[in-house]
Image (cartoon, rainbow, N blue to C red; front, side, top):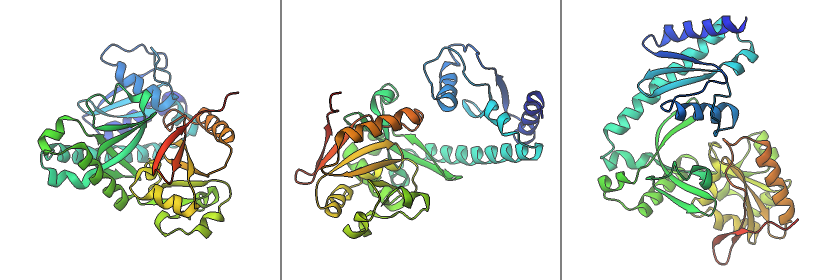
Length: 320
């Protein structure tokens, strides 16, 4: 299938499954208008791991199903996979179906946004790199933890293994008559309920045999190869596990001491024993951050959890 044939097949499939959608083909190098700039930056961030560019870096298709609500496709990546016509149709059908479910549930959330009893079980917490999201966090409920933002979200839906969320605006607090501290407590309880913290080593991750933090034993911890990997049972956005109340204290109990935390991505944190080389931790962190894309990046800082003070502290990077 040629590139043009693939494009025509994708467009035909979109018309079949979303007949009223507006379809726009954006070529690599496209210079956006002011109104399009935000969307083009999203495409560059999602598909090229770059956001601050004045032009589109990846040939893309944008399918606007509802006003300002759209599905995007990386045409270059799709072409490299050399899909069949049936595979393209099935992919488009799945994407449109998932979009429709998320859109409907998002509208349901918005319709009931003033009803705190409806919203409270949907509150969750996610972590974001603070500096890179500073502007996007204006007017949003969050707490700053050094170079990390601990952000309050509303879970809209859980489709195809992905949790779809929306940030909680400060304006919602007046509608709910709640303070941020109370909301974070509720959100962390929800995370604990639905995405309980799990721990293991890299081998455990590969074979999907991570164990509950609260059921782990010092013996099982000592059997791990290298540092322990902490995440949630959902794994996506699993680095939040370290901030779930009781988790840090339990880890100190399991390790029998204070420990270091290295956020290798938004999805997990590596737990190192007290006494491990800070220099090696920073080298590993720098290597990981340079290898993986900006979409997974969380922090450039190694943290130390003091079991006696029951608090986290940033650790300075050793001088070269």
